[in-house]
Image (tube, rainbow, N blue to C red; front, top):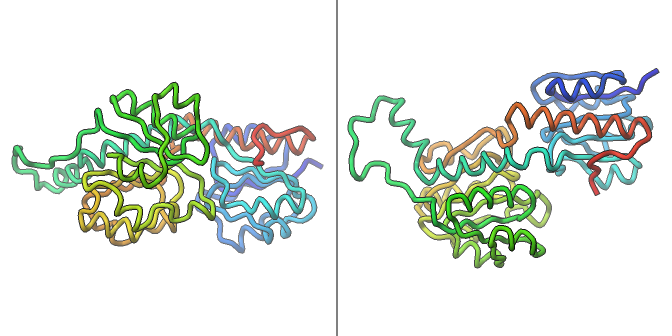
Length: 317
């Protein structure tokens, strides 16, 4: 009998093709309810999950002793209890590398849209309220030649920096460790967090969600930013305190923001929904056809490797 694999959401066909040797159950497009997930995992050897499912010790125990691998179709794996998996000798994998450029594209899209008030302008036009061109209408912030501060200088952060260099931006970064090769390539300068916030015209967040990074950007940090500054978050929602951000945007403490992730997805802080100076995207950072195919394939290939007695391509350490 082939090993059983649960795929918690509908995924691109590339992932399903890699799982053809196994007995595969695919749930549905929407996130499964907790009870549904607990029932569906029973007896499976592998789980292909997405960032919306919490895969903790309870889920692992419900699966039983057959469970050998949890493949998360995401770079971040804060939704998987890695310690619980380690205790149960379950391999956890993620999908780094395949979505760097696509996520960097969306980051820069949000940066440009927020700086140049694109969302506000489109809403004005679609509502039939754009009556004339005016010299002071919808004036935003220039991007070219400005200072781009990147918090978290891994692969995605560096990809964003390369786009910034194309706009003649000065690259600043904050990271736990120095990145000398990237510094040389991108003429980047490492700063502590406070100095970066005080100096940068644009701040882009690319850190994983951990106990240390939860609310990394809150009220005190926003107060350090320039009044003409723009904040962009495409990492994980809880890295930014949404209530504090909404207050900062409403008061004009910072100029604008662009968000692709939220604290309690799919919910968004209601005050943010009412503000004109924030661009809101529904977690589309990796949502290109090519990238989602690669993510699904990599997650599935990790499962296939473990269940075949081989090393996975991208295990979580």
